[in-house]
Length: 374
Image 1 (cartoon, rainbow, N blue to C red):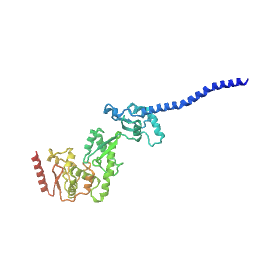
Image 2 (image 1 turned 180 degrees about the horizontal axis):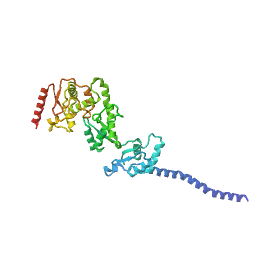
Image 3 (image 1 turned 90 degrees about the horizontal axis):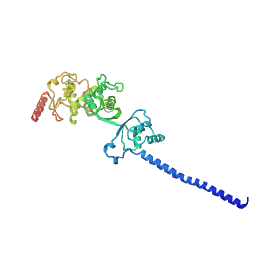
Image 4 (image 1 turned 90 degrees about the vertical axis):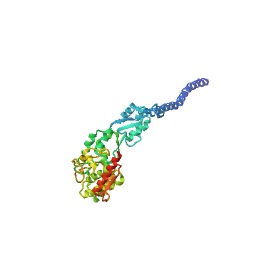
């Protein structure tokens, strides 16, 4: 082969190799573009999948934005949670949920998806929904028990709120949990007086008579019991007598400035061996409530009952209501007074008297005022 032939052959080989190199350069140049397109499509999908199913600003009605209640039973796998959320319209994609759940796990975050009842909005992004369930921000139900309420009033309230039947509450309140609360006085037939009046919150799926009573006894133990323990040496009353007298003071005292004086009147009567003569004890015994228009009758006041302090000397066998802190403290620090009687004016205040004659005059005065306004 001569030189010319060799040169020609090399040229051919060069021309054959150039398309190969150009093709690979093309693919190499195209690869980042493909990656970019895939990344863009992946991000676009994730942006869609993790976005709220509904946008609050564009919803056609407020009902579309309303929270959805969903219950997650104990032990539910995260994949099942995702499917349930998607079916409920709270997230757009259970696949996106599974990806986010794995991401949370890789972050080594403490805790995990928790069981319970949740109120979730379709206007929240997937991450916010997951965060709420991860932290266990379950539905909270609040309830408020006013000072001076009895077990019967509480039970009717819980039933009216749709929590549970009144009879179930009464049944549980009649089972005194001495094992958990050994400080409770022995021989109690029920928990009247020891369920502390306050505002409470419980997990929505944990509302039960047992849970409610546990919280209320715990609050009494936390707030009321230390007051008695601190002042126990300064009173003749044992724990049950203290709460019982405080419950009567709670029912009688309407105006705060009279509370200690009323406690002083009852304390003086107890010390003198006099009957307390408290209307609320008769009302409790008969299961009634007197009003200005319909006061207690002589027949009702004379009706025998262990709770009737017009008939019996001393305190009733149990409290008649749940007293608040003010009445509990007033009972331990009663006013040192010469008054032995008081008569309600039906405006929240009372006329206090030292003798039976003064008391009779006060009764006549109030009766005359009532007749003049009828």
